[in-house]
Length: 405
Ligand code: CTP
Image (cartoon, rainbow, N blue to C red; front, side):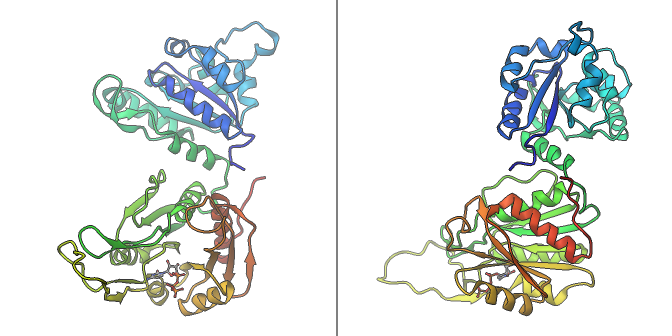
């Protein structure tokens, strides 16, 4: 189940060329079973017709403050009252100025003024308009009101210039929406997560690695950010996109990952090591490509540092340390051994031979083992598993996870 399922999103669309992107976002929301109602400004209608948004949302589009039909007379009050969040995308400089100034001269700005629900704005405009002190002061004012501003993107703009002011990516907006519906029970915590495999080079074209996709670690990073944590993600070579609002450090070898983690570890409250670190590396990386001149080839390998065991030795008072154990047999016994030997608070054990729990799948079934007990979770998506792991971390920190169902 998506965290957006059943959420009532009032979607305000204003007059920017980026208005066409709202169509795709509405499709994404509807796919996740959110309930979308669209409000358009007159300028937005110059770019895309209301019919498009009515068809995609499955609901009538609201446009007029002074609609006489009985169910729409108080639209500016009722629409905000009946929604869980107001999302304004694209948000033009004009609409932001209106809302920052407390004006109510069209239906959308009147709704924003009347809204007691979270308001999320996604600015989209030319870079000079965005950089103008008037726009910047309006953005600050909107933040002071408690509204959520999603950072605009940098790149090619419709006006032909390149710079800040692109409508943010849907991924960043989706994360912000999901964050609205979660309690910030990790706020104030600095957390470090590792994810993915490492690559140990043999020669300029070959390496030793493993099948880890990094999905579990990336899900942990997204979940922690949504719950308010300050998140650093140290990733091995994976193809996943950076989670929004997370500091991502890309590494390749086990040594590089060790350096990145150990340097940052002292300032962290919680460290979760979900990376599948290579245990061995070639004694030397050959400077030239190895040729197949011989019948067989033996590799000389040496052991890599165990990053987690090192963290267990250096661990500071109050710091919480979580390991992962990918096992093919004796899961619980192996988990308990690693928990003890690496001086951990919690270890997350999963079965790498299971069809829905192995590498590169969207689901996982894990057993959580702490120093007192173990608990096997049901088969869940990696997103849901991540939240259950954070719940457990909070309990081990002596705090209760907060759910708002
Ligand atoms: N780990 C690590 N550095 C290594 C090897 C493992 O930090 N060089 C961490 C992993 O990130 C994981 C935990 O140790 O959190 C357990 O990893 P796993 O591969 O299951 O166990 P190993 O200790 O490597 O033992 P074995 O491979 O013999 O099962």
